[in-house]
Length: 394
Image (cartoon, rainbow, N blue to C red; front, side):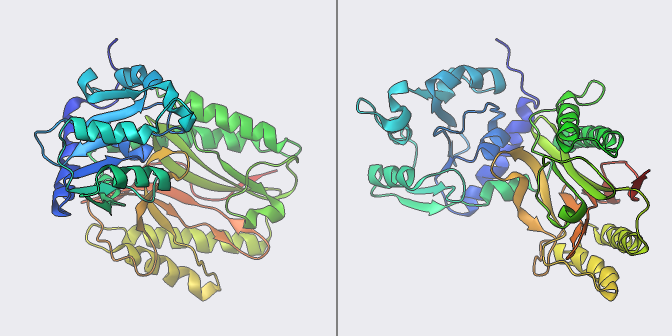
């Protein structure tokens, strides 16, 4: 069966080389990669199998093979979604599942694979902030008592933070799906419509995609109306839409890359106060975009936003954006690297992609507005195209 991998071998080889260079700088011999986002980034492996243990072994030696250890029944999925050879795939038996009386723990197979293949392991990097469990860490340490097992948290993520042209192209496609899904939300949010029905239509649009672009598994959209709009992470509820404010935050996904998008709506004529919030937030976004330049620091973008909104009494304790890219459950599309917040002195470079989320959550209501933006040498390039003004529905 021919693999159906969205990225060619050269693209994945480049990613692997950059990760190995970063690991070498940290004086590591071996990376044990367990975060499903990072496994996907390095191999293309794309199956919903991360509810059981799996690990990608990445020797830092550029001449050594990488090895993906996973449940035996999922090996075929790896053959379909990666360029890995059978020699780079190890399937552990079903007896390992739930560590039953006849079996061993899957990470015992990981340890055995490292030992049998003679992979250098004096200093092993593990992702402590990912899916690795305390028991899995204990198994590795027990198997290699002479090795140093250190945290490699953030290593792959910081490599991922600078997107390649191939990744930018896919995120741009995801943004087109975001635009299409938000248009569906705009048409569906009408007085008397059930929140659940609108959510179902948005989900369908995210999966269906637009034109020839098919969506991959989306993160849940955040949707709220009325007094609940001052909550940033609510889902649909058992109600119907009535007069007042509404917000939707969604993200089109293309080959597991996401493009976040938020817009606000109002059923009926908004109050002058709400219009004032709209204007301040929109002006703040324009200022933040203007500051989002190559060579600027992440905190500079937030400072530009705050300079505009603070005179109007609007404050926001949360960051106003973050690095966005590969999206899998748990942390969805957030990358855990760049934050557009005071104190983040990361210098922006061409290839960073940021979800600029300038929503505000006030005491009695909220206003949501966001864009996914590609930082380029020629300036910021928003990837979504919908108008930013409040949509008023009669």
